[in-house]
Image (cartoon, rainbow, N blue to C red; front, side, top):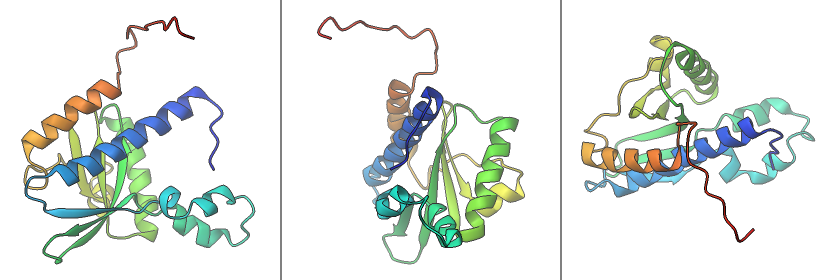
Length: 177
């Protein structure tokens, strides 16, 4: 099991998990039921490998497995299958584009047909890893054809409730502790 030694890493991990959960729920909530979603990532499919990664000697195999995308999407008419990697970024800008470029470059070396879903405070984005690399880390808005705008709005409201970016957030003291 991965251990996190500082608050920034813990916070980043939790935001990533929230983005993954929102993406999964958004796809399942699609009234058209366009895709079946299957959890796939390294931590979910091979937790034993994650736990013993420092002991493994053939690191090349482990590197490929560690790069595995978070989900598999199967179009319900069975004509398409897609890998999807999910990321959270507070916003998209030149700095975050460089990070996405790095992520996409790394993932598509092992999983060439991977798409990226990026949740931000401004909206949701979705593009192929190859296009993200081609566009130097910039990613397209999530199409209403993939997830209806009403569904996107619903999950954007949820994201904003769980990931608060205003540092002046009210802290409530619980007297029961």
